[in-house]
Length: 561
Image (tube, rainbow, N blue to C red; front, side, top):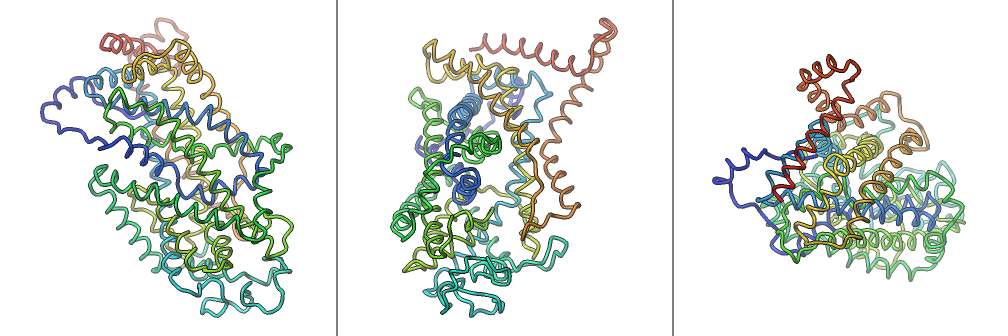
């Protein structure tokens, strides 16, 4: 967990410290939360997970995890963040949080895993800007085969005289859709494999630089500037998305995709993989990344500011947005299936960024007034990505011709395993080391007393339900692991897999490292206990030492509160 200054340090710093920043209006906090949580994954990650996990049936475990893991987790982090922002209660709170330094590494791991995500996140913004700039043409460049980057095997739905759509997209290995060639040869300038790094893609370099400029302009004054930007960046995507949904559901064949999306395949619920995919809740809401704690710490604590309401609003809006994005995605892919005479939309969907940057431009290119719809779509993607982006300067590796392969390695290994471990440890730390009852008391300090039944329900959820859900996600991710593949199902070389596991471990290093440091710092007490009892081991001593210090911290906090 994030560490805080001790009481003496806090009191010494108070006379010279500046007034902390707060949100100007409560609505800025809500909009910032929505913009932070609703990102590019709502467009391509969530719909694809729905597609490979039984269509509408996946919505059942997703909503269950959202209810019993997402909302309680957000409530927990909002309480922690807002309470630690109180000047009067910060010293006893910090004393209690520092009661067990062995779990202090969780806060550092949050910082590192967010950094790993941001390393490759901005390259998606660069792709969006590249498409956005090429959309201001009445004849979109990716719907034709008359360009310098096209190969002799290119075909286009809109230009081919023969009814080639009956062949289905990519059914013949020698044929390539014009949109796919634009993505591979124009946007990515892709190399044959990850072993061929190639040169720098200077077009994407310029787009990435533009993305950084826009991000800086939104954040250079901190929350005072970003709080104003969210009025546009958090709300504009819903305008664009509504337009796309209305247009999508009116296309011929849209019912094919919508039926797949909304009609559950209940037999899929028997698969553990479907329930494992509900880890999308962590990508949707953003708990365990540290962002929710940070933003809530800027809240002005007033009796009328109910952050439990914020947690519910965020969860409902985020879940509803993902489902709404699914309507847009599956309506246009249903139209594509209708155009290509495909039996199912599953043959059209692509993994990862391919959904947004291949299938969608292809579908939008077949709509009358394609340039207008494409500009709207990529403007929406940019505003979605802008709200989720933070500054980080290490994504230059993705600008090489093999950059998309590096991107897939980062996306596959960089965050899923780490975030599940961090979430599990954070819940355990707050529920057991800090204390679920005491955390709820902190919430009552700010929100006022709550009914006894409400207290029992929430403390029980924090103690039992949420830890079980997070631990289930962690175990199933490890047991269900499969290595990533690229192109036509080819496995990555062994060195790339090893590098991926190293990447997954980087953000977790602070947890055992600080635990060992805590053990070393208390080695003298450990020796005394071992000599006195003769049966103690380091781990048990470390745990009970933390609990002892936690109890003393609890008495100090209760006395202060």
